[in-house]
Length: 490
Ligand code: ADP
Ligand code: ASP
Ligand code: MG
Image (cartoon, rainbow, N blue to C red; front, side, top):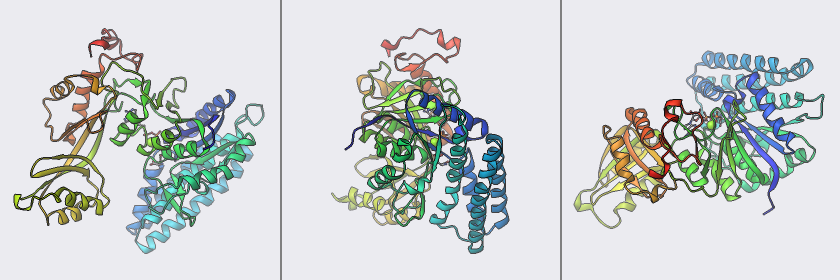
């Protein structure tokens, strides 16, 4: 393994950080700030905010045969991208980039017409449709980076890289699995020379291609994953995930306005949170970074001065039991009840084999002598799974469930935690409970409609008085701020 390039930082900017010309300018200034400190940067960008959703909608419309509906969405997106480039780029640069953007949209429109004519959207074609989002945003940002400071010594010297030439994956369209060795080789061949020449490579996140060069995607939110793959492949000194909040917070600030920034969190805690629904980070992001011990930062592109959250191998000691609360919605509980006649030592295996056959991920399991309860994503292949399970047991489904996951390395050091958690939400119906499976999380299932209320109640109990070495309370309202910080009594 080659040694880390300490002065290299991979900076990923999410959709809101490139949502319009003003956001792209802020992004350029943030990258220039890093370069001014003597660092070199590879920049990974998402599609402009909401563009991926709209491209998915246009592909779906075309797949239904609604050609005009699909083309209307594409037309709106064309105007938005051209307008953004026009506001951002001066004279000649805009004149040069405009035909590039127009050509991308012409290709997208041809594709949508083709899909509408056939009336079918395959996973492979759906990936090609959504790929335009990152292909376009990265082109515009790269051009903006060429313009930035081009007249002075602090130029960014942007260089566009088509991510599909570097991010090599298998052919699982919609959620492709990256081939890390191939990626590392491509990055060394195509990106490293640009860095050595003092340029700032800019590439789209989320998209890749298989070994035949066919476009793939890494799954929703996958630009974070791209950043981690690029950071891992280039042995970067740090990976920065720039988003629209101050870092990883004690819960989703959209649910709880009092959420606090967590200053430092361990890889393990962050991975658990991401897996269990904290959208701020893609679950797969952490792995390539952990393997190479590359610190990951989550930072706010609208408030670049804020210190953000640092994700590190080891969490510092913390007097508070939990770091954050996440929620994963759209889950279904499957109760599998065996008749006693059928009970045998191979029973559990037979049940799990069914889930394995349909490649269905199980989030939580609880068992008793005759029954097993499991939770899965509601959009999985449930009907087929249930039909098969029915051959060996009685099966009952309960939809519209959510999993609340409370994460913290310090749960184990606190007695009576479960009692405090469940008395905080005594008014909520709790279905399944799991503690200790991973030692750093405590999870339970509730009805989807209770999620917001439950999170607010739990947040009030566990994050009103906190360990100030780990949580930033500076944004607290004066009334809350005034309370004594009795971290040691937690
Ligand atoms: P980006 O487009 O930059 O990738 P995302 O929308 O994917 O941004 O993720 C950022 C959002 O994640 C925030 O606006 C916030 O609402 C949500 N979020 C959920 N849980 C958390 C959490 N624990 N900490 C911070 N943000 C969270
Ligand atoms: N644009 C993609 C999405 O919205 C990937 C990303 O932003 O991370 O899912
Ligand atoms: Mg995201």
